[in-house]
Every structure is written in structure tokens, then in C-alpha cells.
Length: 368
Image (cartoon, rainbow, N blue to C red; front, side, top):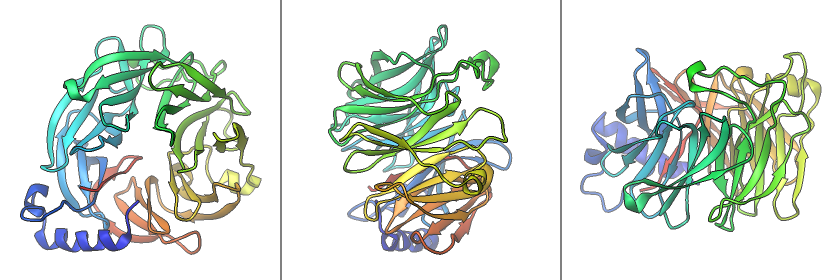
């Protein structure tokens, strides 16, 4: 997590420098300053990996052939990996010190990516969620970053549509949001099994690929797609409901991995309705015990206490997309080009800046 004060200092430096490349912005400084990394499209539909300051000013754009989605940082390095959006065939390795594309890795003919990955604590292995195209089965593909991101293993998950994944605090266990939806790249993003889908949140040993636990939502059409993990091992899961539009099932679940307790947060029907049955991203602020859940179809950011499950606030942000913890609040982006500060769990969202771009649903903090 980063303080807003650090971001402000960086923004002033960036704005003073205009739109110079990142390597020029940081030239002569003893340490690189923090910025946001996100996927974007411009108004002509071209695809980029973008670096932003806290006010949404674009520090650099790296042109890529695919629309992209989630990202992750490789520990003890200047590498950030951004994945193509489902059904993506590539991930892109960006050198954050020079703001340049370092590598483009292909998923191969048998798989496509779901837009997310995470590194091992030592930065050697990259774990990426993927679809085995012929069978429709979900996999975790394991790449060795020390060997030019070569594929070294794949773990079957006994389910479909693995999406976002994170490491638990033990550094040994992956938690994976399984959407349960069967898709095929020949049919783009068409959902082929809505009557029989079987979503879950699963725990996986990152060394062996063994599925350790499987937690199912209360409704088989509650597709688990996004999540975040607290320092003590509480997982906040966001659902996307694939059932009738007029139904309002719970969209947020809490998994306490210490007690193996899985619960869903029941909001009032009115509060549930405003989320429009769709969660796009989740972030936890460890300093305040607050989690932010974005619901772009409802133009809402919902704040909860992830320890108690209490709903704290619901803020209006148009087409809200990515979210990142900052100080005692959050930064969020909009698919309409805005970036907003949520200063805490009271008050309203404050627009910090606006750009002529479409931001995707995820933000990655680059510290140096």
C-alpha cells in the first residue's frame, strides 16, 4: 500500500516533466518513485499498458496487440506482467525501470489465459490461470521467470474458468476464484454452460498443484471471478451472477482461511440491487480492515469491514473499474477515463483527474 503523500510528490514531478518517458522522469534519481500500472484502450481502440500518476496523468504508454486485464509484479526485479483479457493468448513482461516491453509470451495452441497471474515469493515462478481449450478444463500454468518465462508445469483444477488468483500469507498456498463458466475462443466470450456451471473458491498447493480445499457459493450461477487476501489470511471474493436479472443474490463472500469458514454477505435487497449482479474488482486496505468492491454496471463502490462483514458505505463512481488501497482509503479508476480518491469509509468519491482513455478493471502498484 502507498500513501497519498508519496503519490502527490510523484505527480508533481510527473506533471512538471509533461509526458516524458518514465526513464527520463526518473533519470538521476536515487530510487524510482511509485506509479500505477493498468491496461487501457484509447479512443481509437488501440491497446496499451499504461503508467499513471495518482491524478490519472499518463506517464507512459506501451503499445500491445491485445486488450489487457490484470497484472502482477515480480519480486526483487523490475518486471511487471500484464495478461491479455480473456480469452487472451499472451502475457506481456514490462520493464518498469525503462517503461519498455521486455517480452511477449504466447499461451500456445492448447490454452488461453484468463487475465491474471501471481509470482512465487522469490520471484522465480509465475502462476497463470488458463483454459485448456479442447476440454474446457481450468489449469494453472507455471512459468519459470529465471528461464525466459518458459512453461515448466501445469496444474489441473477439476473445474472451469479460473480467474483471479493470489498467494495466501503462508507463501505456499494459492487461492483461486473459479468462475465455473465454459467458454471457447472460437466463440469469443459466449458462455456455453450456464445451466450446469460449477463455480468455487479453491486453495491449491503451489508446489504440487494439489487442490486442498474447495468452497462453493450458495447458488451455482454465482460465478467467482475476483478476490483479494488480507495479511491475516481473510479472502474477499466477488461474484458475477449469471442467473435472471431480477434476482439479487449475494455478490460478496468472505473466506477465513484460519478457521476454514466461508460466508456470504447478505446486503438489503435495495443495496444488492444497486450492484447490478456484477463485481469487477476487489481490494483490501490492511490499515483499516476495509475492503472495496467495485460494481461498474451499477456505478458503485461498496465498502465493507472484511473482518465483520459489515457494510460501511456505497459510493457512486461512473463505470468504476480498478481499485487499489491507499492511505486509509482507496484509489479507483473509471472505464470513462477518470481516477478517484475514496478517502475513507465516510464521504464521497473525489475525482482527481480524467484522461481520454478507457481503463481496464485492475491496478498494479509499482514501487520502484
